[in-house]
Image (cartoon, rainbow, N blue to C red):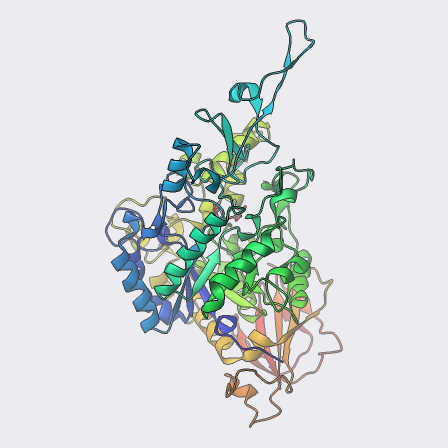
Length: 605
Ligand code: TEU
């Protein structure tokens, strides 16, 4: 049986506000700039906007360092502007989910300012403070001089354990005044909150309620599965962990208690959509957070397909991925959550390189591969996410020097790699930056071929991609062959066919090195829960036909023509071509030559 939910059927559009549209010429995108583009989002056909953080912040990590959860950062506008955004979305039958960043605050949040100024303050225990480890000192004759006394200062001490920050370097910073270290899994200006403290949980739950009472429709939750740290902060023991210590702090001992409490005390009182960003999550672990046996989360972002091109040194190293691995990884999640839980489907966001450069082809076949990727996003099971700019096939940025980089994750991790002597030349370093940097996805949205791509009348906070003269919304709108118009077609297709949202997923040709062929099926007997809820797509209308539907998706994930030899199970089927990114249609499943990045969606008659 299928449990219909609005957020299961939604196509979500992620807005990274500082790079979306600048209304006042300060070079930073803002909320009024986003309000100016609501008709564009309506034209695109999306249902929900996920807005990256717009709260008061010193911007050490572009807003993921919140200094006041209940105010809007001046550069983004006012709370009145935000209210206008919410009203503008709701007036157009679109919804808004906000970014919830509660593993850590900014070090300029009043709680941390108090905590650091006064070890006896009640806010001290809102964060994680620990004594360092004494450093074994060597006497003049080289014999061990015993250990220095604890608290003798950072120079004579080591951090409390070996955990590392995602941004490189230790996950602890020494506080001279109190001679203790505080924990930060990210930047030292992002101190981790102590979720073991019930006062912290109450503060966060009350803040969430405050935003839900203002009328938002849910939250994207930032690194939400690292809130619980184990007693005593033991050293990380897994050298292959995404960062040292992750084996200790990912899905920590009380994580389900905390998220269950969040659901019971807050989320269960609202028809809210939640998507938890969960580092290092397996399918089995996902079922403990989402679905009937979970903590009440609607869905989760996992990163299995975002790690396929990691190299020997992990994320900050260039590895090779394969279509076979991509198919296998996404199939594992499609089948793994089919009966229990719900998938999120994404291929890019503000932390990842542009998907057309990473998984497609940003040269000769940019348009075709961007459309093929759009086809993947719109025909897999789960709630689907479009990252701003991917709907026009925006590409990675051709960084020519670190002076063009703004991202702290890039800057810090390049420093670490340099110290490890991993670059043979500056060009080698830049090649890795062009491959991996989050700034690839943070260059300004390309609206026109004019100055600064129509993003700002001032100087943009980060350079605009020079290819905006060719790749921009204005050029795409109305061009029936454009990536944008193709996105509109496949978004409509998803809205019109429940099988694409609720259907089962079956992979064909699993071992083919570049063809990705799968089918989605909604059997007739799968009626919908929620009284009086007729299926939305006419094809599944019980009055016509048997109410079932079967769709075949055929993708040539390669830059060369590839022969498609259908397996016997589908060979000869009568089909109707619902969508194709080339101009051809077929009415039967047979042997054919698929062109580079050719994508087809076929309804089985
Ligand atoms: O990112 C969490 C995270 O760990 C991964 O996305 C990735 O490892 C990280 O971005 C470093 O590349 C979330 C936000 O999406 C990201 O923008 C923030 O920097 C981070 O949390 C800290 O709040």
